[in-house]
Length: 558
Image 1: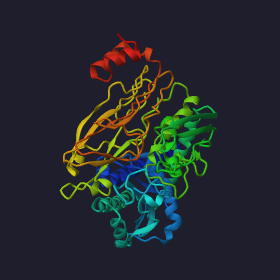
Image 2: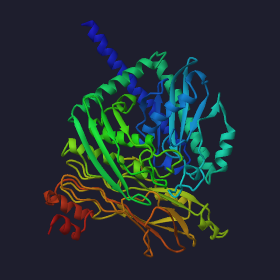
Image 3: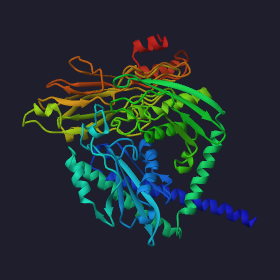
Image 4: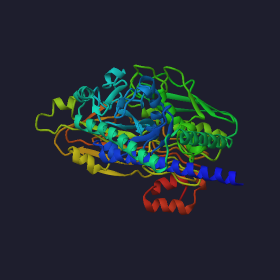
């Protein structure tokens, strides 16, 4: 009896330390938010932070952050260890890369890795990543035809050597950036947050009298893997296929996927997916893995913590040279156009295995709004009296309806980033947001309605033109699909207030005195619209979520 009691107490003790470790990495992430310069990081939370064992296995991640960052970073740390083995590291060292294939999928995201020491011995690795606003090249545009045009590619380098910053790294990087102050500040915030993580880990190890994290890491990874395998048993064994069409750039992109479920794992194979685009919308395999696994986990075991153990039961296969596995030097700047659609592809497979339990499709990839008159043709014609600016905002569409619930309106699923307050963008530039409101009737009709998109109208307070990159504007021809009888959500649209439509993902100029108007897609519906209750329809009418015309057309409501 005493032995069983001791074992139970030990498990409780391990669980307490696990929770404490999650708190450590959450403070690590909050340090980025407090010190970052770029609004996409400090306001929208486009970042991630985590702690790894000395083998490079992720043992805890911060709640703050995006799947595209944290799940790619899980792979990235392994690549660092190939170039810099732990035994060659020293206290005060920091390592960095933005290599899309060895990092997080495109050049705008930097991964920073730092060894953590306790009583003179290495005990863990801290990693963090965030999106920086500019790394040269064409900027946040999908128009490049190779990675060489997209910006500065930093291989695995030492960012700090035994406490001394590598100034040559900053000299090269900042000389190629349109926003050097913000870029340097964001990268230093990553260094600072890893230092914060190390400091808190030392406090934790002292408190719990630990000399090594290895036993705790094994406990976390083994229990997480076991919990995931148990959850997989709720999905019937078999093969389940689906497909999805995206607008693409020069041609539509067709994503094909087959999911195979066994008692021990789930494998998704993207064989048959379109070849890589010659423009920068391709999703490197690390990014493809990140969002595919996230989609699977959302349904199969959302409550199991995300770490090496829980991720190890999922595998992703893709043909080299495809749009979900482009090879160097394919362009990848706007990789989330494809990558952030993949959770819905995973949902499509799971819907065949778990009918009635899967949400409708969402708007998917966020519509990034890079607004500028710096480094563009516009800057050559504006004259010296115009402000030079290069800013970024983000726009979200609707989430698909969920079993038993309507979809969320204007929510970034699957990325999870927050909105950048329009006041921030207006403070950083002469840009003004004239309108930002829900888009009525954009949610897909169903027994449960898809989440609403939004309409945004943007102008320039100065009497000059500006540019907008339409690199990420998808679902303008292929709306989010409903499920189980639910109907499609509204398509997206981008145009000038004067009338002309944007028909591609190129960089477009908003002429002097004109305005940009974007309408974001809505989420797909779930279930037969005729099964929606009259009370829910009336509530939608009162809130302005649907119009009287829409209620009559979509729900036969009089």
